[in-house]
Each structure stands twice: as structure tokens, then as C-alpha cells.
Image (cartoon, rainbow, N blue to C red; front, side):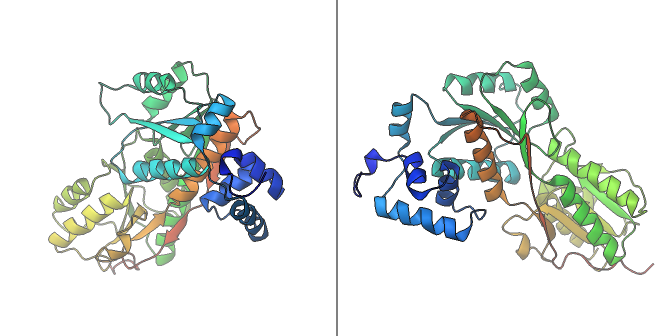
Length: 338
């Protein structure tokens, strides 16, 4: 085997020459940070020497495998689900897989059963459900699926593989930050509670708030949109008694800041605002938004690692959780004086 003949190579041969596993080669090609630097350099030297380029079509023909991952996404327009899908697509491409996706969009014309039937008809080797609602996961349990299934959700599941950013830890970081500033009366504006991520954040918020002996307020259930946050804030007739709001995502936080501004309520002087996601524009909100950062690149890589290993019959963890980071900016401060 010589350099200049990439059609004769596959990722396992590169791994053998480099003395590592094929999953390690895949991680290096995706630029994942979890590979030791000396190992990364060794793999890259072999890749460069052999002029290796993954060829999914050739691999599929040789192995009689499709090397295709099917993705069912609940809402392809929301930032979190869309970012997860894009990261899965990029990680899959680096690992020599293709992705076929289908969005439910909350429509009765496309049910989870319809989506799974469509994806399995494409010959997928594994299935992934991104940002599912509880009803979608229940539907998955009723369907016989003969390939590995992974659900991107925070809580463990006895039926499916799960990979997620640690939603519980993210909500706890928010509460701890506000408590450290002195807040003891915090309102949570949650996403729709049939969305599993929204439910995980809401539960973790209440548990942590109780530990800090914060006032227990009924949550406000939103719809993930900036319009909801704006409309809610605009309905306030006066400065509310709570001193901080934890919004279930950055879009609702943006709407809240806008609506509060129009009511003459200052952020953070009168009320602190925290979001969740760290959208690209969050540092440029007025004021810049304190929020929880989700690493969607790492999430996509972990999803593809788990599904590719499962498709090949390897032993893998039933549950994978990725850490989060609180990005503290100017939208939070000590509570106003009574």
C-alpha cells in the first residue's frame, strides 16, 4: 500500500498503521478535543503520509452497509435542536457516515411512526431522536425498531441509548449563581413541559431553589420564542416582586429583556435575567446575557460515536452526559434594595 492511492484505504487501515482504534481516527478527523495530543499527531502523520480521504460510497459497497444514520428531530427551526442536528451531520461526515433527517414540527400530518417508517425505508443503520417531546419518546417505545436507537435527552432511559448535555447541572449553575448574588425570589419561565429538556431544567431549578430556601413560585410555561418573553414582560403592570428570572432558553430571555425595557424596568438594576443555550448573539444582547453554554459540537460527536459503535455491535455506555458552562455577563447583578 503506497501513498497516492487513497481508494485502497479505509479508516480501519489508517487506525492499524497508526496503532490506534478506528474511533480514535474518527475523533481526530472531526477535531474532537478528547484525543491526547501525541496520539493526534501520530494519526495526522499517517493520514497525511497516505493522503487518506474517507469515501463513504466505497465503504458501503465493500461492507454491504449503508453507513447512514436516521435522525428524527422535533423542531428543525429552534436553535437547540437545529444546532444539534448540524453537529451530528458534521460529526457523521467526518466519521464516514451520512445522515437522513426528518422533522415532526408538531404536525399531526407527520407522526413519529411515519418518521420512523420513512427513515428505516432508507436503510439506516441507527436512529437518533433530537429534542423529543415526551409523546414522541412514548411513540418510539411502541414501535419495533431493528437498529440501535439513541435519544438526545437528559434523563436515563432503560430502553434507549441517551446522550445529552447535562441539563440538570445547567439549571443548578443558574440557581447557584443567582443565590451567590443574593437573590432569594426567582421566577422560572420554562419551555413547553412536554419537551424533555424543558422538563429537566424545570425540575432541577425547583430542587436547587428549594435547597437555597428560595421562595417557591409557580413557573410560567412559555413556547421557546422571543415573542413569548416579550409579551409576558409587556403584560407586567409594575415592577414584579421577584428579583431575577431564569428563562428556559436565550430566545425567551431576549424577549423578556426587550419587554422589560419598554415597561421601564431595567436589567440588571431592577431585575436580573439568565438564559440557556448561549446563542451566538448572546454576548451582544443589551445587556450581554448571562446564560448556560451547551457544547453542540461535542454533543454531535458523542451521538455519532455512540451510534457508530452500537451499529458495529460494540459495548457502549447506556447514558452519556456532557458538561455545561455558565457564561456570566452583564444581565445579572445583586438584587435591588427593598
